[in-house]
Amino acid sequence: MECSRLGTPVKPKLRRSMVKTGYVRPTPVSRSLRPSKPKKAVRSRSIEETVEAYTLVENYGFIVKEARERMGMTLKDLGAKVGEKASVISKVEQGKLKPDNALARRLEHVLRVRLLVPSTEVEDKGLKTPVEHGGGLTIGDVLRMRLTKPRE
Image (cartoon, rainbow, N blue to C red; front, side, top):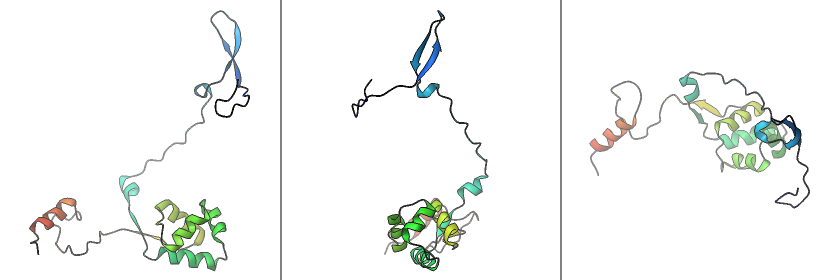
């Protein structure tokens, strides 16, 4: 049997199988017949924990670069420790790439700095209207403010 892509000879893994007549013949093992690895149990978390939002600090690139240089690491060294390429770390330091929460957490752990802060309030510049229901600013509140605001 030959590989359809490369044309090189391929030896299929064979497995014995029983047929109703009792004859045993070798057949190729398909992926569906292989035993699967047991899946890890997923920890249930409360909705507040999974939805909790974090905000990246404003000067994250400068903080990452200073901490990396302070620890005497190269871009390649830091990239290897956090599981990213050196080019990704370089772009984060330059501010061209905003790291996601997972990468920011790994950078925080390796560099021992603070990059993510919990978002407690929505920063609404120019929207200075109290919210009646006390649950925070909603899309409906923003629409009401936009509709009631006179156009200039």
